[in-house]
Image: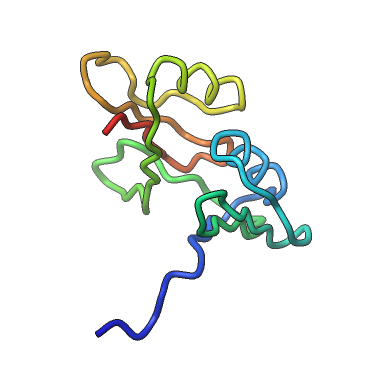
Length: 119
């Protein structure tokens, strides 16, 4: 039997407010917190949090000699439309060349990889 529930997924980053605004632009929700820790309360429940890490080094993707640390899978209805919106918010393409797949890989403004997926 489970004895805990997930409170939040927290991302280290150099600017929590800016990264929270990026994800709020994609996922909706409201932000709260100070300059060192921002919570993004998602409309469907759950929290994505952003923690100040002045020495943050973004993961490399792909990196055969390193780890991506983690990534987020974000479900969308239309990959092309979602890609356009994500890029306008500041995402960077990491791997979106194969347009036949039902997913594409991007980096957020702090360098964390995430996928836009049609499931």
